[in-house]
Amino acid sequence: MSYIINDILWWKISLLGFFNGWLPGLLTFLLGLLLSKISSRRKLKNNLREALLSIFIPTFNLGREISEPQILQALTELRVTTNTYRQIYPKLLNDQAAEKLNAICNKGLYGQNGEVSEELKNPQLIINIIKAL
Image (cartoon, rainbow, N blue to C red; front, side):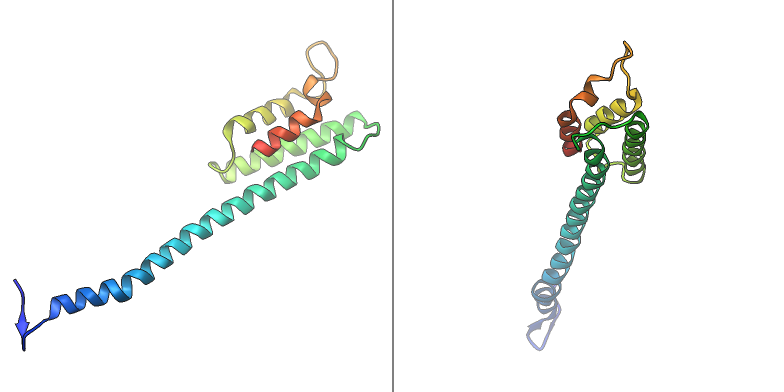
């Protein structure tokens, strides 16, 4: 059913006005929101990685002797930072990498035989886990 007044189809004019004027603006706005969310998520993940590496690298990669309290403090800070990000942003982190890092931090300094755990002897392993987050 079309309303013809003075030989003009008004519904076609208003539909063309919507497609030519409003629709591109709405789609651009929604695309901007999506890209903003992706960008902020990427920045947040990079900030988390930098925070974890700034805790881990000065303690374990200086090439000097470190004491047991320093190691335990670094492991506690790693665990707390990871758990805080997991609680605030539940879908941000890779769950498998977060579980591995949390297991290493919960294991502590000494392994089963009273020796220093193998994960702490190999700092590159922990750095790779942090990068996988």
